[in-house]
Length: 425
Image (cartoon, rainbow, N blue to C red; front, side, top):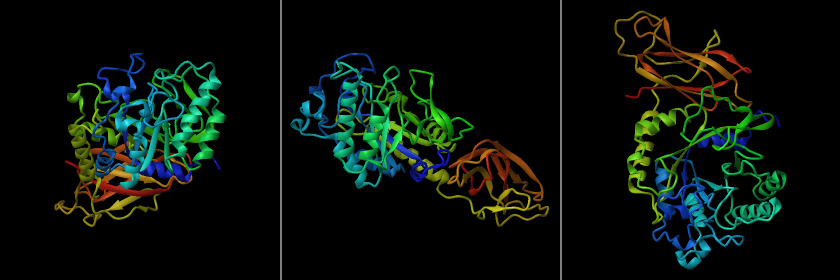
């Protein structure tokens, strides 16, 4: 298969569009602790007395998320499942008398609410057992733990590796990938070694423009500017991970930093609206519940997405014109001059999708709107670059009955699958 053409599972991933990240673990019980600070965090403090993964996932589902990712082991080394290969896990905690398993409860909740299951694992760690004698011993430990996660919980849709802290370690990539692919042949791998998706390069939730998913290199970690070179050009859809607050874990009193809906919508329009996925993090509190303000904001965000993009304006299906442009038209449009423009709707957003089953094509385009009175004439309202899975194009409101897309340049013959128009106040 041509690596620059998306696989069926990559196309499915892009259709997920919006997911919720859950950073939860030993850090949730130690206010003020930060990555790599070296401060001890004894497992005896882990005791989420009201843990309710169903609350997490039902809230995410109500907000419109299609997938969820749980931090199973962060850089601190604490395992959210009873790992046989670690003395630093839920098995050493008083929670449920050492018989608890956060991963199990999370996976079951995802299945109950029909969300795709994602598991995060940090290959690097500074807590727990860190005195490995050589790289092979560490790789053994790594593979043993990943094998537990991929063997004991049924089908896992997405394995999310964090490159942070692994900048100077040489892993046995072939052995690691072989183990993963043998245990879960259909799994998507994020970012490292044999990736199906890639990190967008920031943790703010924004994709660049242009955002062409046919790549020759990927970003690796916030702790290095070096790129991971790929074997030629590969199709790798980008994912934009970001935080509801200023911290990943609920371990600081930082509620004033909760993003408002306008900011979240901007992130959505510059991630999903640029052909990438949006992964928004909320850190459950030490009781094992989503903080009330975060949960409320997540639901408000989901409602804002539905309100803005749930119902397009009544334009026709996309047609290709004799001039090679792509057009949608409203019933109120004519080719004549008119004083009565009220039959035409106000428009300030256009959403487009390419058929990318054979790869992305468009690299530059313009959007034209027919004028409200002189309907045989048009004005350019937007100039863009890539379209890919989805492009959300925002421009000043104009009353119009006809939208035309003119492709200025493309890598191959483009196929525009869909164009819809919206008006959002």
